[in-house]
Amino acid sequence: MCRLIGNSGLGPKLNNIGSVLSETGWFATNQWTLEIIFHNRMMQYDCLTTNYSQSTAVYIPFYIGLDIARYLWGYDISTRDSLTSDLIHWLRARPEWAARGGKDHFIVLGRTTWDFQRTIDEDRHWGGKFLTLPESKNMTIVMIEACLWSENEFAIPYPTYFHPLRESEVVLWQEKVRSMKRKWLFSFVGARRPGPVLTMRDLVIDQCVQATQCDLHECGKGAKDCNSPSNVMSVFMHSTFCLQPLGDTFTRRSAFDSMLAGCIPVFFHPSSAYAQYKWYFPRNFNKFSVYIPDNAVQERRVNIQDVLLGYSEEQVREMREEVIRMIPRLVYKDPRNKSESFQDAFDVAVDGVIKRIREN
Figure: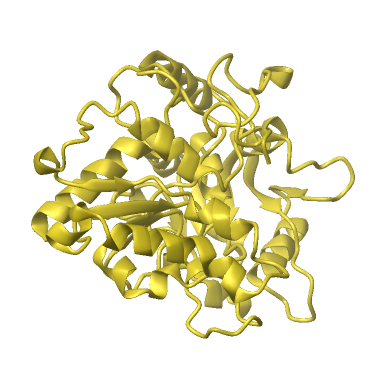
């Protein structure tokens, strides 16, 4: 784990293997290290103060996702809940909490909401119970996947591999992906899930195998290494559309990696994107993505390749340009130094949190 959290949570620096990536700003970033990245970005925030009377919001720098990750498998609930209980007791004793009951506090969770939603105190039940505690209901919670029926949870992007320091690095990358020759109509990067029941992933993979214009990068098959950022990014950079079925939960980090590559995402469920990342995505989702209802695929009423072939060159160009335009707001800057003032995913999140707290 120590290797993965180096460079302020960005992970090991990547070399530009095969000239796939640009020369600077690339790291082997683990998808669960958002809490560390966010904390280090916060330490560079221009409007940070230690004086509560001058603040609008109170950031809680507690790595609750990294804590629960140590105990999700094979540990009892007292172990899973121990540090969470300590945190709540500490917060309740603070004068800042007493002032508004925590309504001006916010915390970042580097895992999905489902890892913190345990409602039954039995060891056989999954996860921790932080998000079921009354104290958490007063806070604003930002995380990589939110519970859509919770009024105080807000989704922000998964970390990608790209963490630019300067706006010029972003512009160069945008120019690179804009100029790519995309030889595949669509692609899928992922693996099947074990079990007797066909999942959306299985159906998507089956259609990709049968299609004439799909590049299937099936993880774990032969030399197809999904742990290689350059391999994964190369697939996306050579594809016009990138399929994003449900992952282990509604969302996938892959959606953000593919958009970073200038690939138009294809979603199969509203909760995978549109209902989640409202601070980040246009309300008109047709501007940047394709939506194919999952039940249409499951009932075999739709052929994915035929749907995607139905888009004109002009429509594709406009959608790709919108995806490329969105890139700066979907990446997290390198948090180790103060960088030039383009708005990244961190800035969008902080603006959203402050706006919500002011309105409440």
